[in-house]
Image (tube, rainbow over all chains, first blue to last red; front, side, top):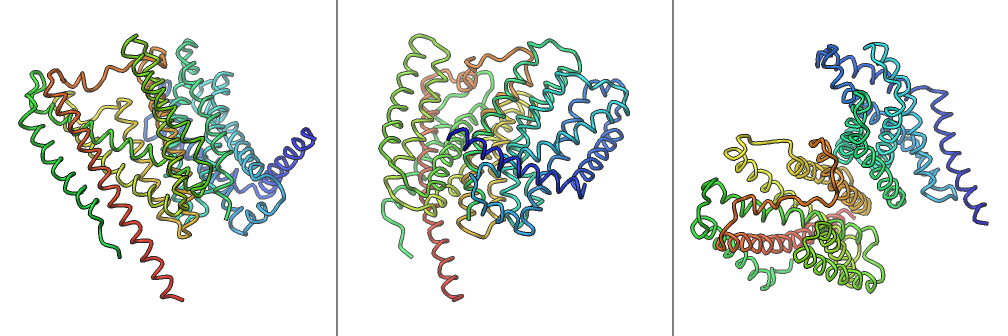
Length: 229
Length: 292
């Protein structure tokens, strides 16, 4: 009985993820926008910060994370806006499933978009600046950081689309809450890129894990209250 | 419109009188600090406003929970948990003082915070009011917290200019205070964008709770950022009051008097702000009636 319920939970969750991925695969609106925007941010950084080889070594991690964070807000806004625009969210809420499946479905969908964009941006960045970013530690940090970002971001985007000032509001709500993720992720990424000792990197990774767990739990608790009429 | 109650009027005047006395104490009673000179006097109000601002933001977590629960629930377990938390916090503080156990200082703060949260929740549930009532409380607390935290940050900058030779450094405490301020500005902006009162109350509550939870995480993430050494969780910060050159009894008296004064001032402003919130609600209802 319990395993049946669990299976049903995962089935409805994966249905929502699948719906988002299929819609995106057909339109490619979100991915192309996020990707082009991310590239532009990197270009702007290149000229505004004078990314010469010496400076690059120090701030690559920072540039990457700022790029991900900015591109991420585009994705989060868009993914909830399409639900709101034609009252698709109401349709989802009518479905006889637990509300948290909707949250996890949307969050996993957002996470996939974000990881895809990151997976494209990383090789492009390596190519443009001739640095090797394929470091398993860095990839782990990017995964943990993206999970934290998306866990909070999905909840806040759900709130932001239901307000009058929707798109403007999301970054203002999101960035102060996401600061610990960005700080620890930048620090851990820089640690891996510069080949520092693990003892220096561990505190940041621990903090990322703690943040992820706390905010997945909080979002799980609160999502119901944010979508309910 | 009901007139202001006598008790509140008395509290108004008490707060004003206390503030005058506290100002006198700070400038004329407390001795001039040897190393820092007169600028050290800013500390008395700096710490007091910081404490009140933090208390206000902390209480929004409890009032926010009451908004989400619509003020309902069984108060008894919360009351038991609340008093237990306070007692444990008090005992842990004693152990920290007598046995010099650093970890106990954290335990006492945590237990006291959980205790206070549970007590507000318990007594709030016992009141049996709905979410609208608690929403007025939440927004009042956030507004007061913003004002007091701003005074805290600004007075800190005034002190830092001659002592640290800069208005601002990226110290964990400073950044955390600023981020806290930004979180609650975002809270007000979120509320301003929502017309539906139920939704406004609920979103505000969720955001206030999320925001407060990130504050300690932000603090620790900056602490890791600034120092190369791994951070031990229980490490004791050198107390700001001691560093602030508080050596004599009259300094301590002034310090605690300022703390008390601002707490009374906070309670007074809080009660007045709630009264204002109730009027605003009445006006909104009258407007609705006139439209029908």
